[in-house]
Structure formats: structure tokens, C-alpha cells
Length: 516
Ligand code: GDP
Image (tube, rainbow, N blue to C red; front, top):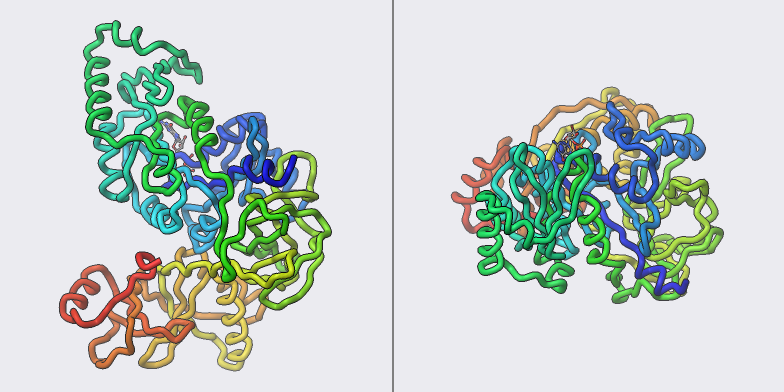
């Protein structure tokens, strides 16, 4: 197969959702389609919420490092699928956001009983920023949920994206009968026990059931007043195709996946400082979006995750790290196939490979096999939400403390700030776990014990100018500087933020999330 053919069959995506919406259950069903796992119900490890299927564990043992939960790749029909995991729950972090820069499409799962939830909104915003196709799956139709029309309008209003239902449920919960497939003009009857039956719409209409008549009325309304399907707008992330179903009952999943995979985006050209790079270019290029350190001090090795943006990767190839201009032989690489192969010999634009990292890479680094020195667009910084002051327990260790902070902040999981009034060090993180990892690594790698003082959840807003009157700021609206010397105010809560805004209309407060 030519590079173009290989690239065009790539489907690299992530599943985003609020915890408990059904991401793991859905992933498991998809892995079953890909013959990656043999039995459902084994994917989730109770404690970590990560993948712990026996097959995966075997591979994990052989590799000696835990990477399997990050990417799952398999061929499906004519396609080659890469599913990137976006950790939720307690390990929600910058990684979760950055992973979304490495995908070409996204599946958003919504729990029909809950509607659009907070974490869905946060993740959605990042996808929105990138203008990638977003496919919605409304899950748990086997339970009494919200009204389908209400769910659609919630998606449109809360997330600000237009929706197009690809199928439409007949009943819900106990009275759930099946799905009207608008896309293929048929009815898929739900029989339970993972069984379904295809019927014609005429047959369904004739049944005389009043509930069904009401559904046809709804559909008519959608046909007349709803959005029109437009592949172009789906591709731009302006319109989300919506599917209903049940991951647990394995109902509507296959139809969803088949449609998704055919419409989802193959790798697209990516921006660099020297212009766009085409994925089917002959030259191998990519960037590192995530670095995973091994928490076990006996194995200090790290894995850098590289998204291939163009060309073909062959093991042992020589590439250049453009930040340092170093030439590297990529010998120790892994792909996250569930086949017997442990190392990856070949990969194409769209794929993710894991590179052994002897502490050489940084997040955002570009690797290229070409002559031109290109840099993929800097990864956006995501606003942290949790803040803690940190200091060293033993002042004799200040030097190691400083070094440790510098290096760990470089890795990108934590953001460094300094309080303007007293120069105290403040760390900001997207998730709780980052502080624990930081504390652990400071001890294990730098032999430094740290002490935290929590500042709680804060709303960071950057200032466009140097503040003129420092008296405006206090502990509820803490003035600090970020790593780049930009002023930022850490507001205690939404109330203090709005109050401040109201009182100081002349001060421009920037939300980095909205700006990008
Ligand atoms: P995650 O946190 O998003 O990965 O969610 P899980 O896949 O772990 O699902 C959370 C809970 O919802 C589990 O108890 C699942 O069994 C359940 N669940 C998932 N999908 C469905 C569904 O379609 N119907 C019902 N009734 N429960 C579901």
C-alpha cells in the first residue's frame, strides 16, 4: 500500500465523556469489534480505572512498562484504528487535554439520564478549539433518561454546536423498542441480549402503536425544523452527528461505529512554523504530546508519545530533534498493537508510537527525517484549576528543590507561578493527581521533601497589561506571574471573579481557554 493509502485509512480518535457515562464500556465493545479482546467485562481494573484485560496485561508485562492504557490500535474493515485514552476520574490532567491535540476526531459520550456534564464541557472546548469532527453517542437508552429532544437542545445550547440525529429512539428504559435509523431509513428493533432485528419503516408505521406515531411526529419535526446533514460541516466540527444506543446492552454500537469510522477524519495537514505539512508527504515528521514517566524508581525510563504527522516511520530510522538539532536513531519504539508484535517496525501519519526517552525529550518537541528545520505549533497551555503553594521542608535543600521544580515544570504537567507580593511559589494543575506525582518525584528523584498549602480551586485570568494599582488584589484575587512573566489573577471563585470584573471594567481579563 502506498503512503497515501495508508494515511487515508487511518482513524485516530479519542472518546471523551464525564466519568461514568460509559467510555470504558464503549471502548470495550470497540475492542471486541477489532478482535482485540476476547471477552467483554474485563477491561476495567477496579482500582485504577485503567485497562486491565488479561491480553493487555501480558503485553504490558513483556514490555515492562505500563503504556497499554494510552493507545489501542487495530485494523477494522478497510481502516486502521487508533483509539487514544483520555484519562478521567482522578488522573484527569494536562495529559488528557494534550492527548486531544493528537487525534483527528472525537467521540463524545453523553449519559442520557444526566445530559451534558462538567467534564464533557471542558473536553469538548479543547476539541472545539481545534475544529475537529465531533460525533455524539447518547448512551444508556435502556434506562429512563431525559427526553431525546431535550438532550439535543442541551447539546446545542450548553456546548454551542449544532446537532443532527442519525438515529432516533422509540421509547426508553423499560419501553425501549429500538432505533429508527434516519441515515439508512430502517428500524432496528431491540430484542435484548445483544440481539437486534432490522425492520422496514413502513412495517413499523403500520403497527398502530400510539407511541410509535408520536415518534414519527417527532421525526417529521426534525426533518422540517432540524439541521440538515452536511458532511462538510461535520468535518469542521460545526455539526455533530448524534447517535443513540446502549453500550452496555451492545445496542446501536456497531451501526454507530461503522458510520463513525466512514465519516471520521483521516489525518489532515498540520501547522508548523514553516507552513502546513501534508500527512502523505514522503518525509517522516511528528511531535511529542505526552511523556509518561515510570513511577518505579528502579526503572527510571520514560516513554515519549509521538504523533506521526507525516510520512512513514521505519524502525531504526534517523531523525532530528529540531529543538536541540540532535540526530537520533529511533530503535526503541513501541506501538500499542495487541498483536504479538511488541516493537513497531513501520507506522504512518496518524499513528502514535512510543519512544524510549532517556530524559531527552520535552512535550511539544518536533522530530523530523527531513532537512528543513520545522517546529510543530506549540501545544496550547491549558488553564489549571487547582493551586497550591509549595515550599521545601528543609531549607538546606533549596538548590535541589529549585532544580526539581524547574525540571518537573518543563515536563508540562504542572504550571509554575510566583505570587507577586512575596515571591511565593505556586503550582497550578489541571488535576489533583499531579500534586501527588510531584511530591513523590521530588522525594524519589531529587531527595527533597515538600510542603503544600492549598489555595483550592481558582479561576485564573491573565492580564493584558501590567496592573497599575496593586491594592486591587488580595488573597481572594491573588496576583501572580506565570513562567513567562505574564500577570495572572487567581480568583477564589466565580463570585469574586465577577465582582472584580464589575468593579474594574477597564482591566482586561483573559481566559486562555476561550482565547485559543
Ligand atoms: P466510564 O467511567 O465513562 O468509563 O464509564 P463505564 O463504562 O465504566 O460505565 C459506568 C457505569 O455505567 C458502569 O456501571 C456501566 O456498566 C454502566 N453503563 C455503561 N453503559 C451503559 C448502558 O448503556 N446502560 C446502562 N444501564 N448502564 C451502562
